[in-house]
Amino acid sequence: MTLEGQFQAKIDAEVKIEPKDWMPDAYRKTLIRQIAQHAHSEIVGMLPEGNWITRAPSLRRKMVLLAKVQDEAGHGLYLYSAAETLGVEREDLIEELHEGKAKYSSIFNYPSLTWADMGAIGWLVDGAAIMNQVPLCRCSYGPYARAMVRICKEESFHQRQGFEIMLTLAQGSEAQKRMAQDALNRWWWPSLMMFGPHDKDSPHTEQSMKWHIKRLTNDELRQRFVDATAPQAAFLGLTIPDPDLKWNEEKGQYDFGAINWDEFWEVVKGNGPCNRQRLQARVKAHEAGAWVRDAAMAYAEKRSAREEVMNKQDARVA
Ligand code: FAQ
Image 1 (cartoon, rainbow, N blue to C red):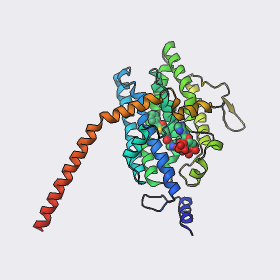
Image 2: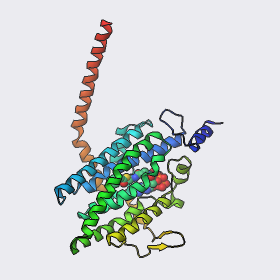
Image 3: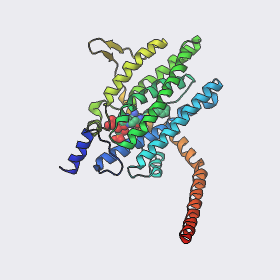
Image 4: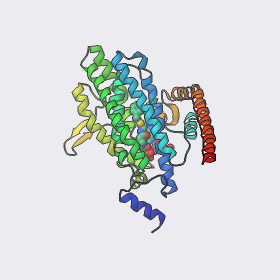
C-alpha cells in the first residue's frame, strides 16, 4: 500500500495522527491553516468583550467576564502550541495576522455596542463555537483534538454566562428587553455566517471530511445551531430576526432565511465594520508586550547558561 493509502487507512480506523507520524503535505497545510485561523480567532475574539470589562454592571459580572476573556487567551495559546507541533513558528503565524495576511473568524469584526452584546456573544457566538468545536474533539490530528477537549468545557461555561445575561435582561425593564432584542438582531446573522460558506461553495469541506479533520459540514453544523437556538430564543421571549424561520415538521428541523454572503465575503476580505480597528489593537498590544517577551527570553538564556556551567561542574566531579 502507498504511504497515502496507509495514512487514509489509519484515519478510517480512527487512529489519531501524531506530530512525528508521516502525513501528506496537504493534510499538514490544511491543519496549519485551520488551527492558526482558529488561534487568531480566539485572540482577536478577546477584543469585543474586552471592550466591556471596565463597564460591567456589577463586580460579579466583571469577574465572570474577565475570566471568560482570559479563557479565550488561553485557548489561543493552546492552539498556537498545537499548530507548532506541525512545524511552524508561532512568531510567523502572529506576523501574518498582524500584516493582514491571515484569516480569523468574521464574527469578531462586528462592534459590541451595549452590555447586552456580552449576553448575545456568549449565547450565540460561544453557542456557535461549541457546535463547531465539539466534533473537533474527534479530529484525526491528536494535538488539535486534545486541545479541543478543555476548550469545549470552557466554551460551555461561556455560553451559559451569555444566556444568563440575556435571561436577566429579557426579564428586566422594557428598556432592558429592548437592549436584549437589539443585540439578538445584530448578532444573529453574523453568528450563522461563522459556520462558513454553504457546503457547495466550501472548497475545503470535502477533503477535510475525508481526513476526519472536520466531522460535520458547515451546513450540517449551522442547521444544528439554528435547531438548538430557536427554542432558547422563544424561552427568552425574544424574536429571531428572520421572518422565514419556521419549524418544518416533515424534516424535523427549522427552515431559515437566506444568508447575506456578500456581507460575509466583504468582512472576510477585511472590509467589515471593525477589521482595521481589530488589527490595530492586536499590533499595539504586541508592541506593548515586547518587553515581557524580551525579559522572558533573557531569563531563559541566563538559566540555560547557568545549567551549562553546572553540567560541566557535575561532569568534572564525576
Ligand atoms: N470567517 O472551505 P471553507 C470562537 C474561510 S472561535 C472567516 O468552509 P474550512 C471562540 C475559510 O478559512 C471561532 N473566514 O473552510 C470565541 C476559507 O479560507 P482559506 C473560530 C472564514 O476551513 C467565542 C474559506 O472561507 N472557530 O468563536 C469563515 O474547511 C467568543 C472557505 O471556507 C474556528 O476557527 C469565517 N466565519 O471551514 C472566542 C473553528 N468561514 O483558508 C471569543 C475551527 C470560512 O481557504 C469569543 N475552524 N472562512 O483562505 C473550522 O471549523 C473551519 O475552519 C471553518 C471553515 C468551519 C471555520
